[in-house]
Image (tube, rainbow, N blue to C red):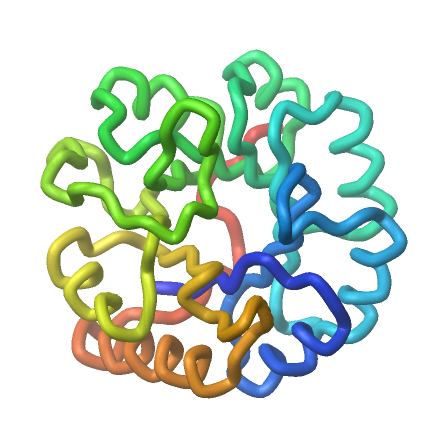
Length: 218
């Protein structure tokens, strides 16, 4: 199981995250308080440990804009939080994580798993496409969804991470507000998140990274 720390907004955030080596670091290009532009993202990536793979988070962005930022910045994964279609995901190619509401029906989730490497199930609502800091009812995740293709998001923090791992058992955990204090990345919270993740991996004899994609969208 891996941890993605999302919402890096400055080189200082990157330097805070670096010592703990989560598998992934998220840069948000979607509108909101964590949004960064291309210049700011480049500065963050220069400060980010290269062992932490950068994920670009987008919301209904133009196709060419996403491709350009991926190529220019060296983003390893695009995480899409809007109404992006499976057809768009096919055209984008590469590693794509598609965010969906946590209560999405199995058929909708499987429709995206045909073209995306992972689905990110989040506490999404109309007008709130993620990043709300709220959890959702994990029992509503369809049992038939393969956990090795599922990333859990929404209100995760050091206090509920173990419960999330035991209840859902996803491949990855996506944490934003739960890694922050006063709007900035907090080393003690990130330390606690990584410790819980690694304890789980030791117990389950698994890993805290996904170095190579097992699903390819050519």
